[in-house]
Amino acid sequence: MKEFFKYLHTRPLAHISFILLCILYVIMIFAPFAAPYKAQTSFPDKTYHPANLRFSGGIKAQECRVINSVGWKYARVKGLYHKVKFFVKGEEYTFLGFKCDRHLFGTEDGYPLFLLGADSLGRDLFSRIVYGSRISLTIGFIATAISLVLAILFGGIAGYYGGTTDWAIMRICEFFMLIPGLYMILFLRSILSSSMDSGQSYMVITVILALVGWPGTARTIRGIVHSIKREEFILNAQLEGIPSVVIIFAHIIPQISSLLIVSTALSVPGFIMSETTLSYLGLGISDPAVSWGSLINRDISTLNNLQHYPWLLYPALLLLIVTLAFNFFGDVLRDYFDPYHNMFPQFRLIKWLKRKKNATEAKAQTADAPSAADGTDGGEK
Image (spheres, rainbow, N blue to C red):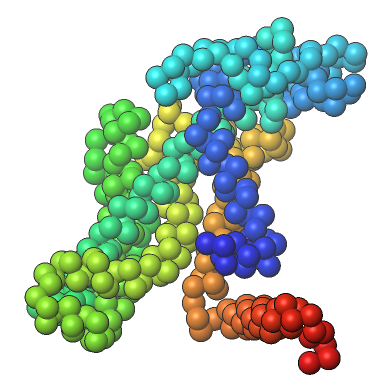
């Protein structure tokens, strides 16, 4: 891990992406604390309210008044501010079984603070994005985990046993890969009940995405396992009578851990985008639950909305940033773990030169030590 983080420092774009993803997942975990309001908290008289955070003699929320209730035009009230404080008391929420009422930031007097603006029902867009990340980001990892388990199971079995088992599993993989993934997802989701609540929809979408995403990785794993099983250490394990399941999961799978790490990093954004597509088409998460896809579906309904209320595009922008961040970070993982990539040999050469230099210096210090003990000068020797 130390060597990997040293390599990560040499790739600034990936380093920034890694820090950004860590921040997003921390915010996701502490969403009730990080968001000033709950996702469904509405201010009916603040419809399409613009962002009102100002830095004038401190952090303040500027008060705005409606001047046109038809197009929801607002005018800032000059000199009328509400002080913003950190760790302020606000709406009560439950976190890890404990009731809390402290939020990361908010106004002292309870005046609405819209960091990114408000939507059509006067709900804080920043709070909804924070709460939406709990579904969008976790679906990516959970669906990836399920898909990876299925790929390791079927790919490992097909590659190790071969023959009829290999033929049957590969035909199943080809069946799933023959149909475009998005069409398969839409078909499976459309035949399920539309009256499911948010929790059921969350689980169904996760399982569907996992079932559609495993065949490609399974084929890759099958090919690698098929070549590794001919290695001497695998043949020795077979001669010792070790069960096949133990050989697959304890001897072969660890040899392809780098591939699995890279596959995970590159699969997560794909599943996030799939969930967003389903929610945007009305087949995914819906109110009262919130995800980035449902935000895009609800708020970016017409070009008129984007023209007059451009802050409604922030969920789509954040989705794009997260997708790019995962891809940049996945590229670094690929470059680091792939010994044949054009970037890795250069880094390996640099590490070898550093190790050689350190070894030479240590050898010189060891040679000088006896001379110092005898009172002689190592340079004269």
